[in-house]
Structure formats: C-alpha cells, structure tokens
Length: 335
Image (cartoon, rainbow, N blue to C red; front, side, top):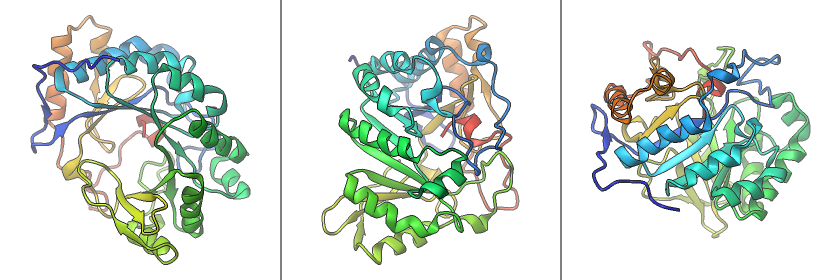
C-alpha cells in the first residue's frame, strides 16, 4: 500500500483557515432500509445507474484529493454502500492510496462481505444501529433485520476490523430509553458506540428540534450508571469522547445540533452522482461529474475543487432563523 500524497501537495484551505483532509464518498443513494427519519416507506427516486460515478471516477477524485491536497482520510458511505455490486473493487483501489480508509454501513451484508472487504484493504468500520429491541428496530427501519445487523457486528469483529463503531441516532420519544442499553452493549461487545444528535436531513422534512436528544442528556444518562470522564484532544473529530472510569472502553457523542463543531470541520463530500459538497448542509454543489466526463484535466478539476472549498461557509447555523435546509436528504448526500 503506497502513500499517494506528493511532497508538493498544497493544503486545501477555505476562507476561514480550515484545512481539509477528509473525503466522504457516497457510492449509492440506494438503501435496503426505509428508516422513518431518513426516507418514505416507498423509498425515494433513485439516481439512474448511468448517472452514478464509476469506481474509476470515484478513485480519480480521491487520488486528486490525496495527491494534490494531502488528504489522509476517506470514508465510504451511502445510502447503503454494500448494496452496490463489487464494493471490494473500489476498496482495493482506494486502499492503494495509502490513507485511512473507513466504511459506514447498516451491517446487514457484513456476514458475507466483511472478509472480502478486509482482504481488499478496509481497516475500520461504522455500523448504524438505532435500537436493540427487535420490534422497535422494525418500526424505525421498516425492516425485520436486527439479527442481521448484530451478526454483521460480530462478523466485522471476527474479520479483524478495528475499531468497530456503532452509530446510534438518538431521538427523543423514539429510542431515548435505550441510551444505557447501548452503553452496556458497547462495553460487553468491545465496540465503541457513538450517539448522533438527530439532524434536519430527513426526506420528509418533518424534523423538529424538540426531537433532539442532546449530548448533555446522553452523557448524564450514561454517567449515572457508569462513571465517565471526557477524553481530551478532540481535534477535528466530530465526536466528543468519554471513557469509562473502570477501563471498559469509551463512547462518543456527535453534537451536530447543540454544540456544532463547524469551526474545526475538515471534511468535503462527494455524492454518488458526482456533486462535491463543502458541508453536509450545503445549499450549493460543484458538478464534478460534468468535469470528469467532459475531459477536464486533473489541473482543471483540482482548481474547481479549490474554488468550491474556498467558498465554504462558517457553519450550518441549525436552529437560527436563517438556516436553510438542504434540498437533499441524508441518504442522497452520504453520511
């Protein structure tokens, strides 16, 4: 595995001095779940396959980010990335860049795919799981697949992925009574649970701030049962981390709503149909697909990326009167 970063790489810096080193790549907008906070029961209008970037096109953008700008992290997302055929091929291509390569998935296909993904070069993984109760899981996802997800977590551990993180979207009145259950699950399974504040990216547009279970509430609930202390040195990581005083691991909280971390954001996002977004909540996009399929040179693509990130705003300002909701849902942008 060679490091593709060049000695003459120029940092990708926006107008607020933030250096960008993390690329989130959505490989598909399709998903085998229909989570109530993400999309309607009938699903969404999927992007036609010929409008999705090919694995070669995705790798070209990733290589430019690594070689030209010194990116050191790439995360594959969806939709559900494992529903796209031959995902291990893309993993192998990206692993050759020599950067930290991760995957976010709902875990349902890991029992069959984890060994191949690890062989291709994947080293760490995040698995989405919003309830440990079968009936509630089925209500949230509209699928009876809890056992498949739990088996997928075991398969990820068995395949040697490290760390294995479990992402839980914490929602008031939905799963707020399972916070300690998730903490216990992480401690017992040897996985790191990360709670995510519910964000306004649902396809139905029904998000309400009252549904947000806050970082403070989550930490207080766990600390009342298992004493914890904060882990210092958050840096550009989205999660505030807390370790258990008895030494049995840690958990994290991503407080996107109540304690936005925009001032330290180092991420850019590439949608499955080739749109570059400088923020999860961006209201503008750069059409890289048109450049990739219009015979643009690497220099021209790099210049376009530089200009787009240079225009990045200070922050998303959720909860402010001037907050503008993005036109795309989370499944269409990529987590």
